[in-house]
Length: 349
Ligand code: AKB
Image 1 (spheres, rainbow, N blue to C red):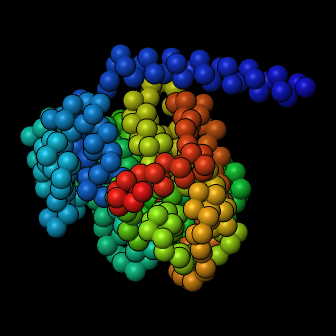
Image 2: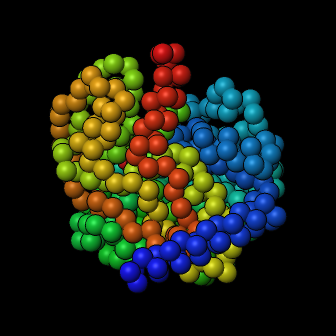
């Protein structure tokens, strides 16, 4: 009885805070001119469009590397600039030219591909971040650099992994993410650079496919279901990982940068979570809407080993308390939306 009452009070308090927070975003947008490094990737392509819709098309600069140029709406809706994260001068020039106050650093190799290219993963993830932080220190920019569930390793508690716990990843990806968190905190405490971050789970979206991640199967499975193909799952049953629908992830990336700094006890990086499932759970959910969908297993030993070293689910209490983080999509809502949007994308009735 007592438990129920206190839950209710927390719920009411949280919803009050949400209202108050929404008002703060509307009244005082802190980001004026934003540079996205890695704007054509899985997160960047959608975040750039979302930021343009909030802050104005000309105020959000799509940074890209040759060979990964913005296309279509992304190219037409606002300015873009070649910004290779491994080239500090290019970052500084873009910041100067567009009077940038906030940098979204989205350049990275995902977990599975980083295992085959560890030096490049370090060069981009850590060397690139140092370039961004140095420019940010000189030009007084705020910096968002995503971390990941991959920043934890097998020594962290598996379920409800706490905000502050052992981070001893076994992958190169995780090593770069933990290093990135430490460097970002260092630049905040030492130089006052306004660095902020969230630990993203596997991100699911119908827009730009991910490339080389361990959680990619949770995107691929929807494409197979919509295209009427059987799906070969690369990780085995009971492999639980945190996942999130892209609209929630984009909101998190924006809300953390707009959050009231006086409330932030943590900075780099916040656990955020919305759902955790294994292949059986997502398959059964899709089957509710696509009854003849079929899945078999064809294990990828690398992805399985990486997934086994990661948490099953994170505890995101600190993000909820310090900046009112709250996901909107659960597995069912995400599945309905993914299937609908992919059917539209492929012209399937
Ligand atoms: C990956 O699988 O590498 C990423 C991640 C969870 O950071 N999606």
